[in-house]
Image 1 (cartoon, rainbow, N blue to C red):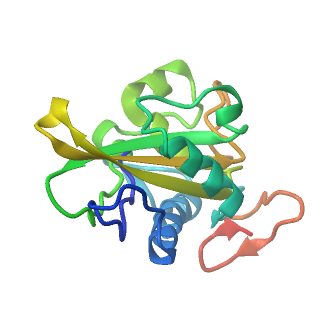
Image 2 (image 1 turned 90 degrees about the vertical axis):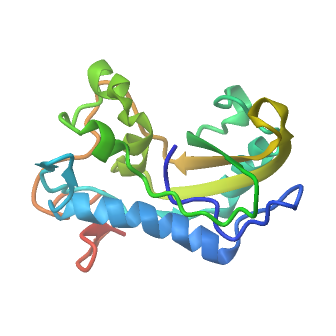
Image 3 (image 1 turned 180 degrees about the horizontal axis):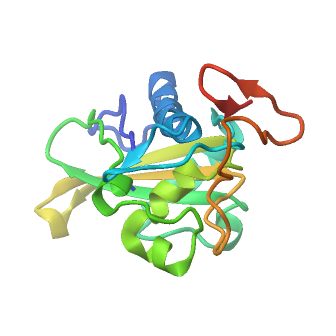
Length: 203
């Protein structure tokens, strides 16, 4: 998962949670992507995506973050299963460093692999953009992330391994479903939401 993460975390700590600045950075990175899609200005590897009519604005959710932190504390090597997932969507990220962790890693899957279909079929998912599509999934409205300093990793020349888990409510990446509805910006906001004109997102 190559997304804006690892903010305000000191590598010498055995356990850290995202600061309020880090939380806001993660939320802003998601909403910047979602807003550009909603407005029809997002360009993925040379292809401009059609505007989205139902994309919700994401906010930080402490309950989701707690669940994500609990899983991050296990220093995971793969996605959570069963009750550990809590019914949420999930993206994982690992980083190795020899110094202080304060890096910003900007999301690039759409740029690296392109985005040629708005339906999440097998070909689209397997093209390498499965993490990005969860970030863009229209129905998702909340995110929470956890982070764990897993210490020196002997398999990586004793560099410090950092594990990050981000979980999403509601989950996305349902196969053979549209990532978002194409149409005039904000024209199909879900019931109980309204258009935020500055972002083009449903709030």
